[in-house]
Amino acid sequence: MQLGRMNHVGVAVPDIEEAIAFYRNVMGADDVTEPFDLPEQGVRVCFVNTPNGGTQVELLSPLSDQSPVAGFLARNPAGGQHHICFEVPDIAAARSEFEAMGKRILGPTRIGAHGTPIFFVHPKDMQGQLTEIMETPKGEH
Amino acid sequence: MQLGRMNHVGVAVPDIEEAIAFYRNVMGADDVTEPFDLPEQGVRVCFVNTPNGGTQVELLSPLSDQSPVAGFLARNPAGGQHHICFEVPDIAAARSEFEAMGKRILGPTRIGAHGTPIFFVHPKDMQGQLTEIMETPKGEH
Image 1 (cartoon, chains in turn blue, red):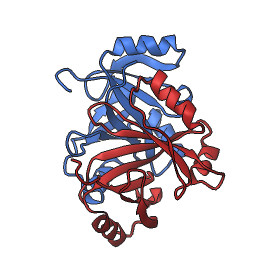
Image 2: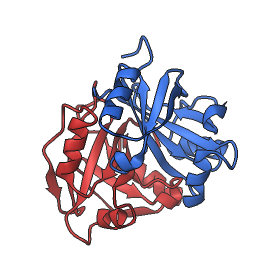
Image 3: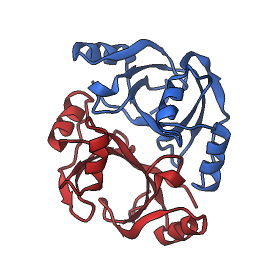
Image 4: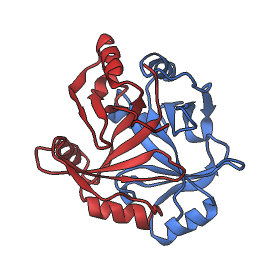
């Protein structure tokens, strides 16, 4: 695989509006995107942009008790780091390479919060980290 | 506070050499720094550089059973995301602001793995995330 940039760190939060206020008022973020629902993933999402086009913080709150993030918050009520996302130039090639290495891929390749194809790899095969692999948006980098 | 770039994501690993091999062979990283001991923090450390000066992965393995990372690995034997680090222009100003907000700062300001002053803030005051605040290295950004 060809490692691309770290696109974002996914952070589970119990209340997305409260988390946005935290990033604005405590951390001093001045660029937070509008939250939107991603029903396919069972989450409400927004991004905290860091300076100079840096890696984003993706805030994730559950849309229902069935959301994968709901399970995470049941174990970590205050929230916390949920996954890490790296870009790749070619999602199909990356998927084939992970499959060939015997890594457990969680579900089909689908469209993620940035509008490009993504898939997740099981934390037990990834040094304990739930890992999102995301195709670099066209026209970027 | 003025939010700077996300400098790195700290990832606890039981075996740093095995983790380096993972990032090279599975993730396709081609730029990993030499590991070195940071006895003041009780850890052995190296950085995985991501393309275009992106946010780094900091790999952390414990130097002893007393290491803070040893406790994390006891709870998460495979390893996992341990902390997140954001840069600030002025570490003393940032510390004063966190103190004024009543955030629990863990220990004194000290020199971190990049050779600039850092401090950690308690995850319970930071949306569940152990957060490192680091002064931007001079001459960068």
